[in-house]
Image: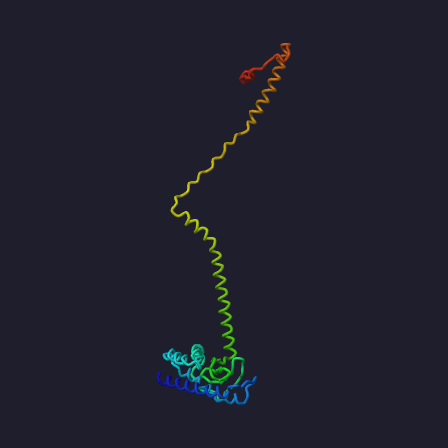
Length: 260
């Protein structure tokens, strides 16, 4: 732990001194490209030494290192890079070596210095970004170099995770929509909770009066029979039918007709 802290202090001191010298030399220099003087100053920056702060960092010293780096505004971005390092170090393995050549580029945010490094499992590009005055580190990046098979595997895994997430959300929405029909049932149960069972009175059907068709037919037959009998009696008596009134008609016993 003391060795790691010592490395951090030395690195911070060296960085602050280097930034101070670089700032003096770069003051007032404006160019679309990297001129010879600026390039010379960038090449003097020990980019690989910043990587050693991460490769030699143990898990138990992470928080203390983060606080130490965050106190210096010039190198505070190195503290933010600790999380990125923790995300990729498992894919790299142990540190082997770093290239002596540094790739320099200029962007709207400043200058970037990239060095290729070799680890046990794969190579990695380590990039440090400085402001235009070279007085402050604005960011660090760890870019492991994966082969095609690993890239395809990661792409497939990301696709599977994305599609799986979409399907899970759709299934959840469908279940939620399907459960809406139970809400009304639940509300009805809650409203009727504590109430006695409602008595249902069946509506009595109105009495249907049958049309006395048979009686009408019988009455019709009786009138015709009365007219015939009246005409027969009037003929036998020699009187007018209008003078006869039929009071009632009674059917004779069937036995008399049979005897006849």
